[in-house]
Length: 139
Image (cartoon, rainbow, N blue to C red; front, top):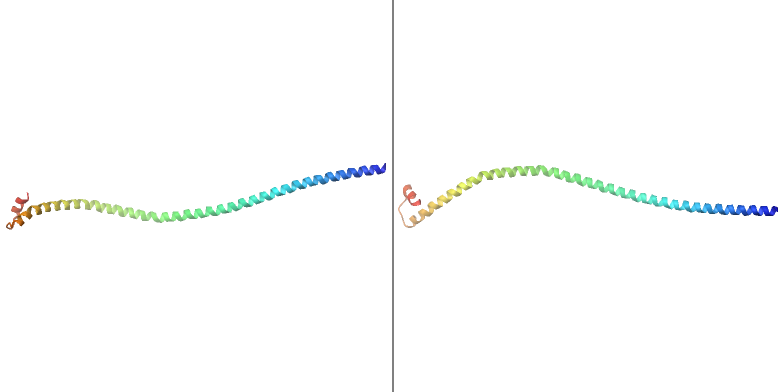
């Protein structure tokens, strides 16, 4: 009877030990799975940090490009303003010259009409002209 009790107790201990080993194995598996999940999370976090560093570098490069373009723009604005002022001055000169050109063209037309009127008389060997004779032949 004592042997049976020891055997029964040993069987219970073996069963408890097996169950403990099973629980420890299950817990170990869970811990292993959690460690894999944590490792994956750490890897993903590292990837995201690397992406963030790349994005910050790109953002800094864009900021430098914008600053450079702004400096070019700021340098060009005074040049454009100067060209606009010169264009206004040239337009003013042009506007002043147009009436003079029109007047010269009118005078040229008048002189051409006198020349056309005098040419046949000169070709006919007419005597020298006076102002009165020119006016009579040119009207």
